[in-house]
Image 1 (cartoon, rainbow, N blue to C red):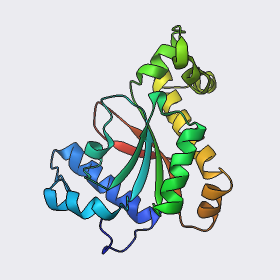
Image 2 (cartoon, rainbow, N blue to C red; image 1 turned 120 degrees about the vertical axis):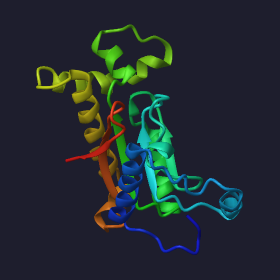
Image 3 (tube, one colour; image 1 turned 90 degrees about the vertical axis):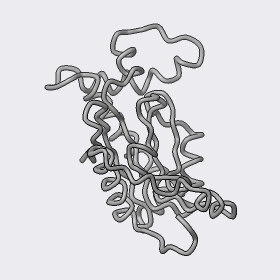
Length: 198
């Protein structure tokens, strides 16, 4: 995005991402904003259209999944897509200072972190800090129809999106004012499709 383009609403930014994902699924990528001119335009600042909080999994690259380019997405990645104060602070920066209109929390299928937690795998060192939110999502989805771990990934994305939207004072205020839209989404690694979760 450049300073000469009008700012998008959260809903408009979501439409841009979903249209890009449709191109990704169909193998019709446009690879926007990957050229030298785009890179140079960003020297004076950035105006990303969306914050994406997702898993650190190498199979989940947001720029590719949404067919975006340099300066388009403000991406935060961590194992399991869990939220922390550092992540919240980064999101606050994006929505308050960069005026990013959309925050998407994106879970995904076949999440290694959630799968490991479901098996009770030993987490040592700092990895142990990822387990509590994963275990909570697994607890609340046990016995539901469908894949247990994928259900937990969806629930975790929804719970995290809710936590972000209600984070006071900065994000919650912008959500209330209609300046920021927070959504949960789910990426199916097998199909490449992103679906917005209710």
